[in-house]
Every structure is written in structure tokens, then in C-alpha cells.
Image (cartoon, rainbow, N blue to C red; front, top):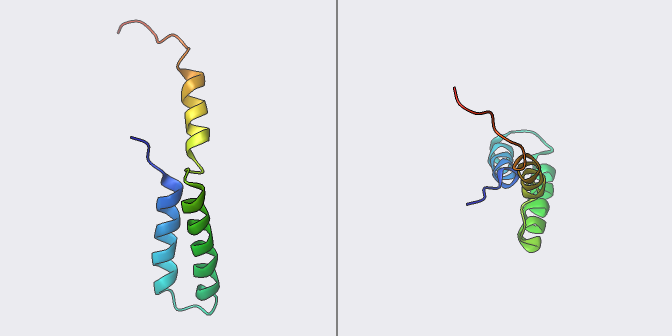
Length: 67
């Protein structure tokens, strides 16, 4: 199963900014909401491609034999 850590990070930031008593928290929440909505519309994780490429490049290497 593939996990999307960038989506988790955005969700954590939403929670943090919802509780911060700063004047620009509403702007930050709006920007994060737009990013999450865009991510949901696209339907893919923004960090999966990079991880998948790194795994496929390393899969062809031989592992060291024995201890």
C-alpha cells in the first residue's frame, strides 16, 4: 500500500494553523485548503513519483552476499 506523506503533512498544518492565534492563520488555512483540494482533484500523491523512481533505480543493484 502506498502512503502519501505530503498529504499527511498538509493535514497536520491545517490543524496547527486552526489553533494558532495569528492574524494570517486564515490565509494559511485557505492556501492549504486549495492545495488539498487540488491534490484530491488530481488523485495522485505528489511525493509518490519520486519515491517510486528511487526504488526502481535501486532494485537492479545486487545486494551484498551473506554476513
